[in-house]
Image (cartoon, one colour):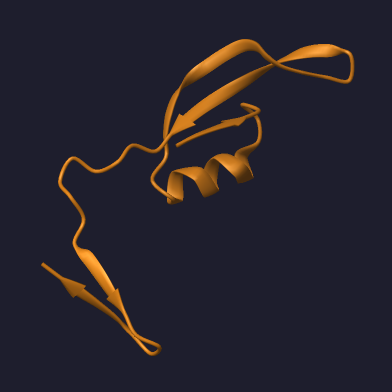
Length: 66
């Protein structure tokens, strides 16, 4: 999963990093709006190397299964 944000957008960057996204760098001129190009920073969230346990759901709780 990837997300692009303006480098100065500290609130969005904070949300992404709290969710586990990692910065992969800034691409100059990636975005275009209001008649000009803008730099954007790319964040990526990779799948874990180790598979996540299966979750079984009920109406009241989640149960982790191996």
